Image (cartoon, rainbow, N blue to C red):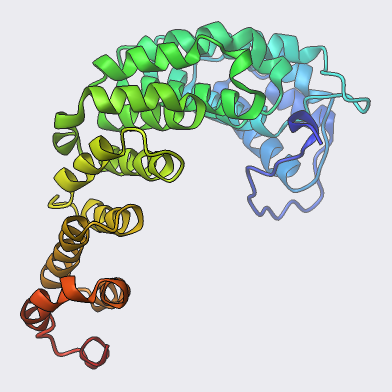
Length: 338
């Protein structure tokens, strides 16, 4: 089954609809010159459609009378409507009206308001119709250089969604554009999203990028570091090329102040290397987590990992017995028993 023929339920809101209004009643409200009335009608229409009612004739009414609205509430509701409205005919062909919808979406992608622009990109992430996305590709890529990080972040996710659904062939310039964005991006979330796209779509570029800033990864924020560790595990399990350089990055991150990063580093070292030095570093990271974490559930998880290390590397653990005892000086019987 192709991506375009799959049906997705991305919005679900319960609504006590009673006796649903007719298309004519809703159309009269949508044609109103008062934007507050348009917004109320659009909201009612969306709730009715989500709960199974069909109003195909209102698509053209909305294109004619509502799309031009500058009211922010109407804009937000329109994006939900574009998400749920039926976009194809019974035979699978795209409805002619969707050409006009594409034009409206393109205008929103170039909107001066960063929220409208960014939320439109978020909407396109959920679109699985290439015939709708194809004429918007240029506008999407242009937003990778937008002045607001909110827009850039959503532009990256939109590019990733298109490439993931339809292949990098439909956006051949995307990996290079994303790589260039990575080199100058200051927003951590955007940088992480861009890097994850490269990891999944052009792994060689992602490897090249990480190795080019090997000594800087430890200062780049925990969410980006976790993405780097994901790449390290993926690469080192398939090839030994550059494994030493990747493990050095893991060693550097093992003492991170981030609990998640420290834990993932320890797990990575145990799974990727049997070297006594690597195992000792992993065990130290686990013991540090035991000491610093007050959550007993975390302590139990870490103790399970230490038990696994002890099974295969008993000699490494012998020198850490006292450290572990000190870390376990807590009132929880479950922790002490384990």
